[in-house]
Image 1 (cartoon, rainbow, N blue to C red):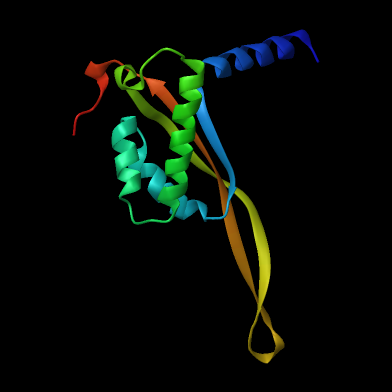
Image 2 (cartoon, rainbow, N blue to C red; image 1 turned 90 degrees about the vertical axis):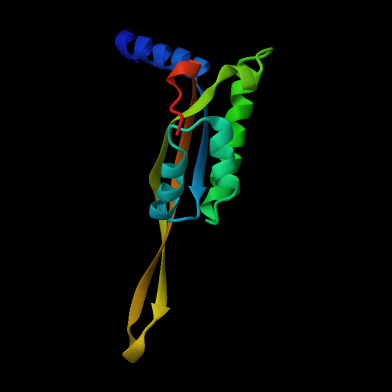
Length: 138
């Protein structure tokens, strides 16, 4: 590996040490359905996002709720001795990417077959600390 590439890799590694995030891979829900839930919590304060996900009727909200709790836990590990109530955490980024698609066949009339695509996704959630004055009060 070249020196520039190695320095860049080290820089990215150092940035990840300070960032609290969680990743959910190969979730068997279509990305379109998961993005609807992700849009509900993007930019929200952590406590408000947890309440929104807990009372949402969508199935994908349960998985995003667990992911958010995991990200909070990761933040606590990196920031020992700091109370989560005093830190004013928000969901800085949450994005949904398409994962593998399982292709299945369903029998159709006259000896044909229709393809069924069972989609899955990857969800990445990043937390960030903000000052109380910057939080959007809605």
